[in-house]
Image (cartoon, rainbow, N blue to C red; front, side, top):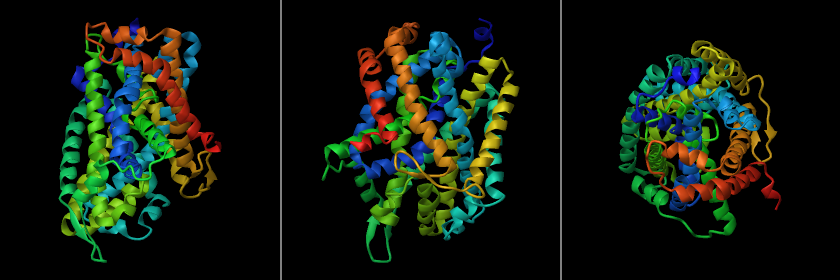
Length: 468
């Protein structure tokens, strides 16, 4: 009971929604969502994603936030307090952000590097051959920028829930939204004629993004769209990595949980959609359909700088604003990732926030250095079960996102759906007298549909379904 009384909490619903949305709006929205939408038939992917967001995503998000508020504990200890034998699920849920944070800080360092380049007027240099690979394989700069990004993240977490996470989210999220909307509108106004005399516009790219392409669609193709959209929801909603359990534990008992969850859904889905509007039309106008196939680092650090360079005089300013927006998104997400671990250390080992944050920062720094060396002295390549070629960063990403997160989500569905019963979550949501919208849908999803979908996603990630 002492922990409940002394535990910090968000000052109100707005603080929680902005912090949770800040966690959800990260690099996954910006470099993964547009690529998948372009690859998977544009509007078809959007429709499938939206349906999954209000069913599958809603179920996982509601469950984790409710578990956090009900137990007033972090992921490492929350599951065990609900059911002692399920303590292992909390360990796995805490392990995910421990793995993610080091390589996320490395990528965050890359973002700072590009932001500084465009801010100082050197954006044109970023399109030179070998610029990106030369930077990430360097002996000094990747480590410096990784440390700088980690320092910014740790500083926010050191300051606590109210003065750090909430106050930072209240400043960065409105700015981020303004930048996303502004760049998206600008992207639609772009027109470009290439060296071959082919003229393309941003609006034509928008049509590709919005209008479903059902030509040649097969059952296997639709299955791919479904799996891609499900995988993206993990990134978009920050579920199955302990974050929403930790943030839920800071929500006051008199807050309207359902209203807040609905707002997080809307905010995150809107930003994910706008990320596509921001990127796809511009890339299409300057690079055609083939340019839209880029994903991950190659989209953000190779393809988009070429687009900015082709814009001429204003390209440097647009690039600077774009990477500022990406930096804000990466910071708010990384803060939530670190907080999931720090709150776990505080609850489990009774550490002070200062000590817990220092320990996690040290862990992230050491492993982050190893990740940087993965492009340098420790470079090697292996083949993953899903067929991808990987080195250190990719292996960590695969273990956390493709293996552990589906397992945590499946375990959460079984625990709440069958062991404890859906009323555990429903009662927590309704205890303030608010109505649980989609209650019947939630029961069906948590017990039957979500576990099956998650199992399919896990089997696909492990490469087992490819054998059939």
